[in-house]
Amino acid sequence: MTFDLTPEQDQLRDAVRALGRRYGHGYFVEKAKAGEHTTELWAEAGRLGYLGVNIPTEYGGGGGGITELAIVCEELAAAGCPLLLLVVSPAIAATVLARHGTEEQRKRHLPGLADGSAKIVFAITEPEAGSNFHRLGTVARRDGDDWLLNGRKCYISGVDEAGHVLVVARTEDSSTGKLKPALFLVPTDAAGLTRSKLDMEIVSPENQFLLYLDDVRVPADALVGESLDAGLPALFAGLNPERITVAAMGAGTGRYAIERASEYTATRKVWGGRSIGSHQGVAHPLAHAAVQVELARLMIQKAATLYDAGRDLEAGVAGNMAKYAAGEAAALAVDTAVQALGGAGMTTEYGVATLLGAVRAGRIAPVSREMILNFVAQHVLGQDKSY
Image (cartoon, rainbow, N blue to C red; front, side, top):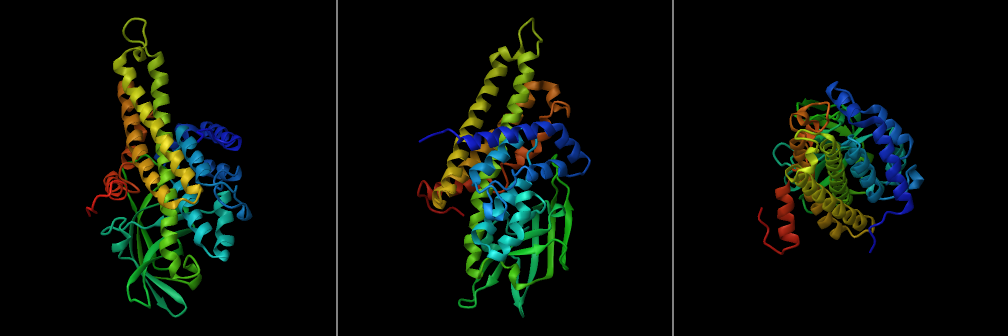
């Protein structure tokens, strides 16, 4: 057992950290508040190969795994630039296509995902069903050689930045008559696909949308995989990387907040000549938050290692635990940093309160802490299913 990164992973961490710090949290907030996207950072990260670290080399990627992509997510977040579309496009979409797409789909889409020139977003959540794919109302049915998709999706990130959306729908199994999940690559400008922007109380350059699919026609080759049998494994192929990279982004955000607060408390002097950080009432909460973030990072590393080793069942448990731990740790770290900075913590200048909405959302999405506890109770503790 080793906790050391390989030399190549260390170099990746250092390089991504340097890139993130060149842009910094000020850039991130400025873009978000102007209603703009982090186009420059994304393009440079793609040009340097960071967006495609987990994509096979034959399609223009780095040939690494989710371990490497988690490093990219964490270090950009630790620099104050938590990019949600890293989770959606390289982690979910690229993994699904690399593992379950047809060869034509891989050749068509993966090179653009690797260099950042293309983005594919992910649409599973629905107003009534949430993320419960057993109750999804979006249905795809055959119409000649094409498919027609109808339904609604909500909280879909970055549709305005993407060329395609990976839609999770249900199709009828001709042998059983039952509905089963399937994934479709739908152009974001497809006829019948409309969107409505959701106003969110989160400082983020990435927008959230409601999607409406009204007889959206796509060709047969829009179906991910060689057949409908690819649907369920393709869906699950994207969920573990999603949880792991979301967790990495949360851990990086926690590190960023603790670093900002530590710099402030080590130099801020109010009572005599001592820094406020010398008082245990200030130092201990920050130290506690730092411990929680580091524990989350260990679980993220374990989950990514298991996933890259092909141990999907174990990675599912570890990935959920990592997401839970990082969500709690990030929320604690940002809240503690705000408290340590006092009034300064609520200003845009000091750059921690701007993360409050995002880390609170991290305890809800992409899977809530309560559903993770249900998962652990059932699959680790052997309890009866409670939902």
